Amino acid sequence: MKIELKPVAFVRNVRTKPIDDEWSSVVSHIILAPDIPHSALQGIKEFSHLEIIYYFDQVIKQEIVYENHPRGNTNYPKVGIFAQRKKDRPNQLGICTVELIQLDGNQLTVKYLDAIDGTPVLDIKPVLREFEPQSSIRQPDWATDLMKHYW
Image (cartoon, rainbow, N blue to C red; front, side):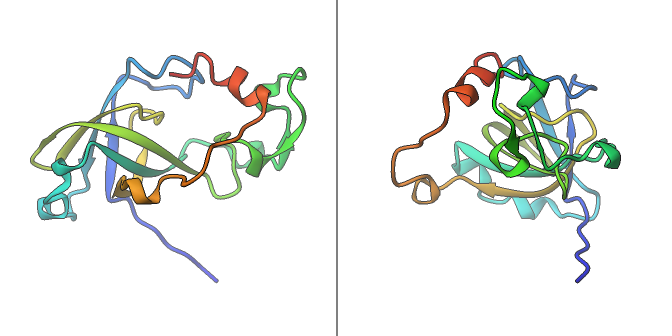
């Protein structure tokens, strides 16, 4: 099976390197690709949050891993790639829930997007309460520690 995707938009912001922490101060602009009509964003400003699905286009294929210590920290347990959100993934997909700040023509301004400048966006979806977890979220202590300076 062959799956082909093309970007619907691109990220523009001040981050040019995939640094792991301090993303909360980064404001990003998601600009629609030229072949996507502005009408694709009609009604989106009624939502406070969006899910952005993007492609880690700068990942080096040889760095894709299936298990490791998150961030290379041996104080954390070795876990599989599907038990972490590392960029070096088999299909190089990222997903992030962002806060929508503004819509201006073909451009969304958002906060809390952990994608670097130029990142291709594959899809944009509104966040609906009904799709959020219906039960309590559980995560290991190492994940909480890892994320303490992320945002």
